Amino acid sequence: MIFFRKNFVCGASVIGPAHIGKGIANQDSFLCVKKRKFSLFIVSDGMGSKPFSDDGSKMACLAVRKEMELFVKNKDKSLPITVLLENIIETWKRLVYPRAAADCSATCLFVFVTKHKILVARLGDGMVCLLGHDKEQSIVFADDKKDSFSNTTYSLSDKSAEREFKYGFFDRALFKGVVLCTDGISADMKLGKELPFAEDVFYEVRKKFFWKRNSFIRNMMKNWPVPHHTDDKTLVIAGL
Image (cartoon, rainbow, N blue to C red; front, side, top):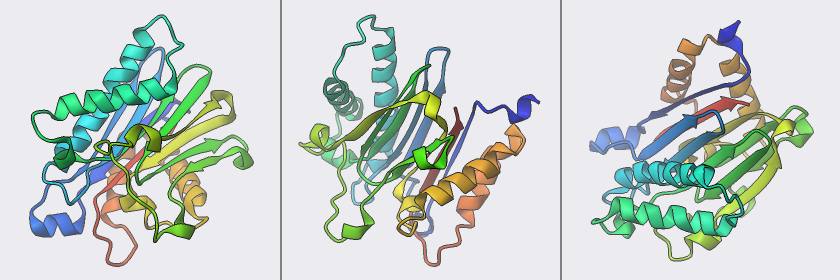
């Protein structure tokens, strides 16, 4: 049935209890793009201490989309990844202007999927999981919780942003799905529980009718089981 086809995408974002209490907007954003030649999944978390971080996260999603679409249209696909990431940062700065970039600080995580390849890029907190057909092939891009006291949250406004991006290229044929989330979710994951969480939520979503998937994700985040959680939460799940 078409409802259960393996190639799907869904996502949702909910405002955290702390922001509801203070009357602050949701500072997370996400964007999913599916076209004939590629798919693109993006999440961004605006830094809560910055006055326009909600706009910063929205513009992060738009900047990634703009640069990846330009990359696909360009017949010369030899553009180095470092240049591509620099272009995303510069486009983001233009999009947030005339506001100061430092007032719009936001993280940037995305997965770009073509017929044969997957690009994963991550700047700042949050998590990306590539789910392998074989669980031993699954890959997690996340914070090093063993050294949590020294972790620094990087954002698109940092002078060293292009050097702090973590990225990797992978064979699409090895993977069945992808899960992206902001740190409102990933920060609550105990060390070693990231992949089991991603696998569980992927299978729960995949078996549902397509019109129920977004509401299922949203309700799960609204009823998050971790006591005293406060942050905004964003989750994107896709079958490849």
